[in-house]
Image (tube, rainbow, N blue to C red; front, side):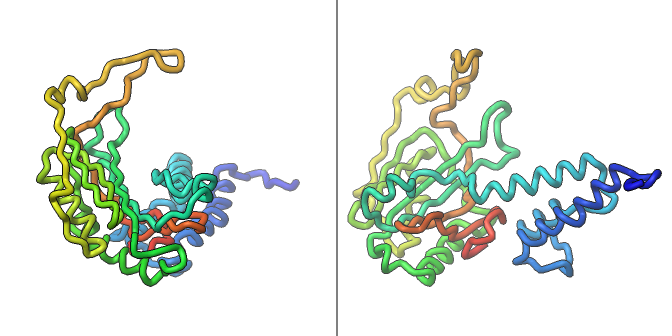
Length: 274
């Protein structure tokens, strides 16, 4: 008989996962070490590798959860919430200056029930560089400055609000739109963004706009509307939330994928700094 009489489907499945899936987990996190890696959950990537690795005493539920987590992490390299430039067809239409984007997201424990995490993005151009002058060494310098300005102390918190603060300096690559609680918190963020390129803000370029009835214009709990066959809650507009810096990346015309500069999450092994 090809299958022995006391054959255990569960044991066979988990043994197979140990041999095959754990090998994929090891390869994905190979920057931490090979089979002799000593588990260390003090770093984000170390914590993720340990959580994804199948253990001998795992239940079927634990096995399933570990596999789901690993698949989610692998998809993150392609499902980055970073969108816009470069879009291939749009990208080819004109020659862009290199662009840096900073991505922020609300801490999961702070997310209001039934709502998605609040996010935020800030982007700017590198006007002193072209696609043929930007290099990995230059990108490394920007990654280091982003780590200093946004990565320390658990990640910089952008305190988003309803006040629109715009800072425009096209010659130096800035057209920033910052939603903040007040112009003071916006100035702090703008100052850190400009410092990535060693620029000093010219506050005459800052404009502040505040709605006279913000509570009515941007209700904390938006109304329902009929969407896709049922009543659903409309998205919030200008929600008040603290969003924490997560990662930054560099778009360069001609590169298929962005280069991740600095990553706090541990999801992007190609990041120059993590």
